[in-house]
Length: 403
Ligand SMILES: Nc1ncnc2c1ncn2[C@@H]1O[C@H](COP(=O)(O)OP(=O)(O)O)[C@@H](O)[C@H]1O
Ligand SMILES: [Mg+2]
Image (cartoon, rainbow, N blue to C red; front, side, top):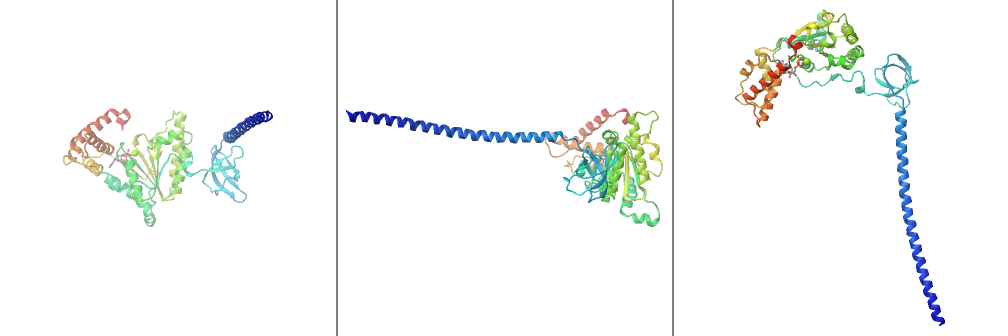
């Protein structure tokens, strides 16, 4: 009896033990779970903390006052860190440089300034230059040679004498005792090769080539036109020997009207600056200025007055011989069928400019592609001429007719 009682007791105890053991296991599991949950939460907390940090940084960054741009005029004392700058808003200041700026400061570079102290905070890379940006500076002029210019033999000859020779052999002019020419003006209807010849002479002379488009200058740099002109000439001096082309000169060089709006006055200031720059660079022969315009009839007489342009060169619409040469130039690389008769094409394109002929050749290629062919045949050209010339006639506006 006693033993059976003991047995019962043992059993219960065993049961209790088992129960406790299970319970402990369960608790242990729970602890493990909670622990891993804690790890997860901790990781999450870290992540969120980092996010807060990032956002705080961004807020600080956004709260920073804007920097203003300026240009270094002179470095007074590199050790004591004193620099003269001209701010984009006008006045000049003597300022210091932030310790963050590691590169050395030289005069002429563009910098970003603290709005309150005008200290130099950053050096702006050259291509962020707010004034020179948008201007086309071509050091490596595309391979355009005189052989790519059709007709225009006299014009090429003159340009070689007036631009290429003085840049290549300045001593010749010194010896003879005459002042080398400094500027020439190209004028003539649109698409007759003015820009093309300017590029060709720059390429053949192998000097820096700066091209500025007058209308863009007026539109983009409202209020800054005169300053921009100054910058362009400074840049040309820096890059010299150089050819500076102001294309569409009429946009800034049109006759000054007496009854002018503020926009006109702005254009006039730009023109006045241009005139003074043109008068200013006579002493040095290593910059040649080329102006190009479709509208010489509206150019200000002050610009045309002798001394500013040494030569005025007209670019006429191409005659028969010139058109044939231009057709030859623009079909050089084309895959032409034997049926193509350039002479005939020349005869039926009496009113076409060089640019029209180029468009005709490209369009003829498109017609061949549309036919699923790799070879251009005569009828491709005929359709292309039809399309190009018709399109041009639709496009013709009164001003173009006037030209
Ligand atoms: N005389 C020419 N010889 C060869 N191509 C020409 C000629 N005239 C114009 N073109 C073609 O037409 C394009 C536009 O001409 P462009 O020189 O810009 O004319 P413009 O400056 O006189 O308005 C040139 O890039 C060139 O392909
Ligand atoms: Mg042009």
